[in-house]
Every structure is written in C-alpha cells, then in structure tokens.
Image (cartoon, rainbow, N blue to C red; front, side, top):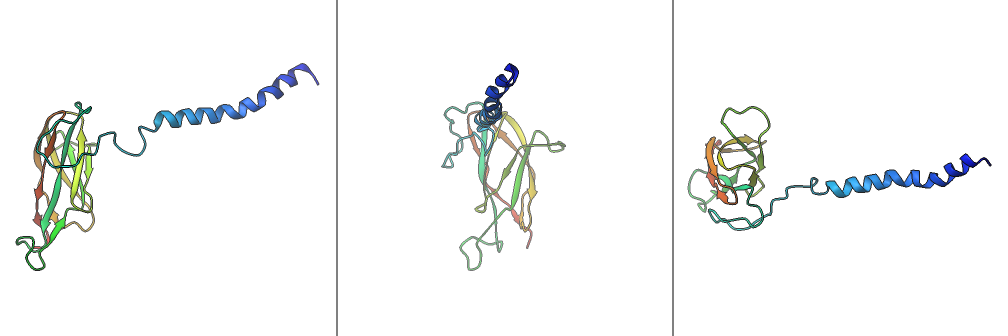
Amino acid sequence: MPLGHERHARRQPFLLIRPLLCLALIGLTSTACIGGSSTPQLSGTSAAHPIAGHHLMATVTGRAWTRDCGGPVGEAGCGPANYRGELVFCRSMSEEGICPAAKVDARGRFRIALPRAGRWALIPAPGNGNVVVVKPRWVSVHLGRTTVVNILGGNLMK
C-alpha cells in the first residue's frame, strides 16, 4: 500500500468526528438563544421594583380582560372574559415593522421585557375568538423596574 493511502486511512475517523464536534459546539453556544427569554419570571404585582441582574431591561406585566355581562364579576353569569391575542409594544403608534409583542395567556396575563426606557405604544393584536376591546395607549417604562398595566377593556359582545 502506498504511503499516501496510509495517511488517508488514519485521518478518515477524524473526518467523521469533526462534523459532530462542530454541531456540538454550535448547540452549546446557541442554547441561550433557543427556547425563550433570558428575562426572569417574577411573581407578584408590585407597581415598580428592581430586578436583580436585569437593570438593562424594562418589564411590563399585567392582565387584559372584561366582564362577560358588563356588570360586576360575581353576579350570576357574569364572569371574567380574558383577552385573546397579543399586545404589541412599538416606539410610536404609527410604527411599521416588527415590534416586541407579549402573548396574553389563557388567564389574561402578559409579561414582556423591553430593551429601552421611555414611552411605548401598547397596540392590541386580537386573536381568534377575542371579545375584549383594548384601546391603544401609551405606557412609560424604566430600566430595571416592572410596570404593571391592568386593562379592563370593553366587551365586543355587548
């Protein structure tokens, strides 16, 4: 067997392992980007409190809902109806393009971390089956603080 073929035969197992090593390195370096936000999930609804280690973000949290019947919750047949969809936060009311959005969960709660302090336009993006009217509004946020925005909207069914 010529000398050149022996070198190639010795390198062949390494040629198979190198792509696997590259994939493993890519996977290790990108795990922080896959699967969600790096913002901590905090409980509680204090109006403004510092977030340890995340002083470069401004958090907005709250609830968007209405009453089924238009009367007080607890009245016979008058339970809460939660907003379905997303709440979009843009730098202006007329901004075109991609803006950060908070998905409203089944309980009507939302949470979003915004990259800058200042005024943000909260714009509704209703989903299928939504009955809650949410009017666009301005929200002021501060870095390192949580701003609570609870929205008691109108009812599209009334």
